[in-house]
Image 1 (tube, rainbow, N blue to C red):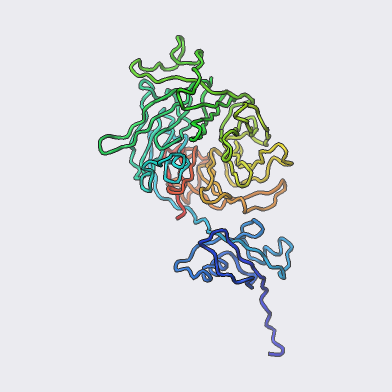
Image 2 (tube, rainbow, N blue to C red; image 1 turned 90 degrees about the horizontal axis):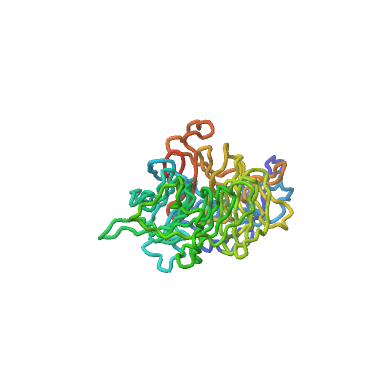
Length: 470
């Protein structure tokens, strides 16, 4: 009508794409949508095109960044004309993880690992023996000198023996499944221990049997990493050294005589003469860090390469064949933990300060830090990647929380790209309450992200907690 004051709503053309074949929409060409659309409206649009019986929560990426605002805000912030056709990728969104359940153990829990049909240890097994849904196993390392294995119904099925029967003589700081029938652990008693795990069957109960004691470190072991196909273990020690070991007794060197606990004059607990556990030494001990080493990892794509972090502020890359340091990346803070993000060529490094630095490990890279993850209130103790999304990871902190991050969701800060957490997970009983100062009593020490069981976290509250987004 002539003289109308009605205005035309601003619109923009979108070319929708996805890498998920199950979410592919019919070929439609560019779609014209209002610039006021946010994620929920775009999700409803795609679900309508998919004719989904049940709506699928979706997230949207433009130029690699997750859309957190209206399309209009995105266009304005990036100086893009609404006449431009935007290429928008969509994928299944991460649902806020809800509390599933938990159980408590006898003391502080330093680390956790999961054996499931989709876990790395199961994938390394030729037969993936009995690791099917509902038969998952949860492994914990404990300050009370034991490791424990619990079933998917949260029932304790076995505990490691005492030191006099071949177990650890000090707090256990790390434990990993290297296969469905083998476990490796390390702790304050300076040794790395290889265990045979016999699961329960109709005729017997589950058990952990000490099979090999590995000596070579002179101080406590802070962390271990395992590689099933090569039967090797990496370790990070309080004296700053990195150890490389084999779990095969026949391939392992003799143990250094001056470190073995049975030598006279030692203060370490002597083993029971009736329990004989073979003792072996390291393949190599690497020296480069100037202060205690905190975490280690094999490279996901090349097991001849390893990484380590330290309180000396460095992320070290190692050639595990020669033992030579390949690169040293110096960060702004002491580092507690690491998590490789292979598809991004980055390594997440949690620090004694309340942030995670995404480090480019290549010496040739112009910048050490590619991004900083900000949001914790205390040091970051543990990291784990999302098994279904190469851009996401979870961090556990001494502030008593776990936080979930998407590395595509960034903003520019004064010193470069920063990311804020998508979701926060609190310890049971602390939902909606002010957290204790410095996380006192509820510090998170370890976290694991498993496709079947979700996010599993452990810590000072003696609790093994499960949170899952679906």
